[in-house]
Length: 184
Image (spheres, rainbow, N blue to C red):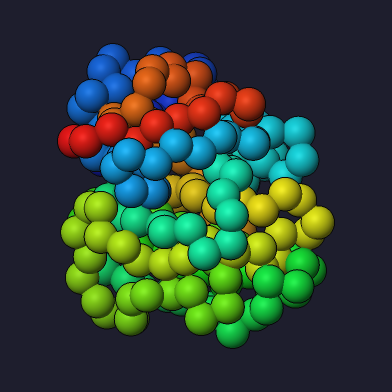
């Protein structure tokens, strides 16, 4: 049985489509009323391969508000890299652990853009950070969001999640599509 708004693989390794996106525990990682375009979705051609297969990149200007896609406790953050530090591994980030041992990871934040502290409890929709361009390796300005299970470190396998407060995306968010954050 799969919980937490993510989809488990079947015995044959195939990913099922969600039975109901509305049952997901995740919402878009930005404020209600905002709309951002997905510039790279699941299995994206630039960097969403292997363990990063289920990451999602949303185009957004530096300093845009990033919100908790799901409630939990802040377990890790980095915020000392400049937006001009575009080398891989130099990402500012916030990681939130959820009650089912999944981890929401928010990457490419601006310098001093973490607006939370380690061990802080956040609820879904709380402002947690400001977007940036740190570690973005020359790609357009964006927020990278992904979720991992039982692993909050750098090279953890990401898992597919659906956002219940936006338009349907049964195969994950699609590059080139704008997603508006609706109330939930």
